[in-house]
View (cartoon, rainbow, N blue to C red):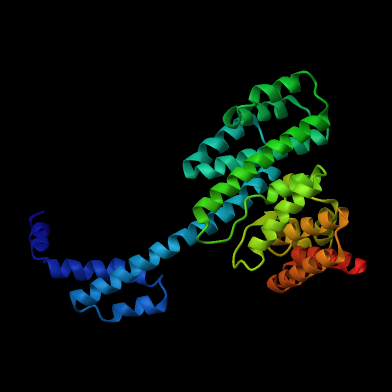
Length: 330
């Protein structure tokens, strides 16, 4: 013990500083861009060292939000995938919501929306089991004030289609809340519109004027955006989508076997701008808009086609479909 203590006493501040720089700070610098890491080629003076460390700190602060954005993006994919692959029970819901809340409160809102869509999809297939009712009770009890109203309707044997519609509406409201939270927290990283699911639901219930208004606003905001959100075509989300898009995604899955696992950006993901353009075009056609109005939309579609790489299959097919619909009328 005395030998160790005597050796430690020989270590001065310079030695410890050099050791810390070589063992830790230089290793961190290797993760940085070259213009930062090369600053550590000469840290013989305190001024040079301070400048190099400051650059690391500055770079990390600028990239931390971007890293978090990517992590959230992955979580958005994994939550519905896991829900589709594994049986959702009331106990599982409690575990999901508790653990997701610890990680990020935004995820509990997103999970609630996906869980409601999951139950709605099961009910639409006549799966009115007690397990599904327990799941519904658990999710609503954690997230909604209207819990008692929905459950009382269930107990009085509400027509399945009406219950499904009610659950879809609640899910869309929570997806919109989730979008708003994302826009608030990541608005400096990407362009995020918050009404894409609202527009989708308006189209689904036949409110084409409302859908057109929301979609047009979204197109104007997203058309030249560098980064934006997407809508993934997981089984629980398909019920909100238009038949044409569902058929396109099914065709892609049939042709490309690699897309049958986890959906990716190329196979079964549609960007917010493509979805907004699709809804905008469909509403204009249903509302019998003028050729001039449709010509402007066609110009928007051509811009979106250029912005999306060819490998973004679903986006490209959707854009080609609506472009063709407009061209036929011209």
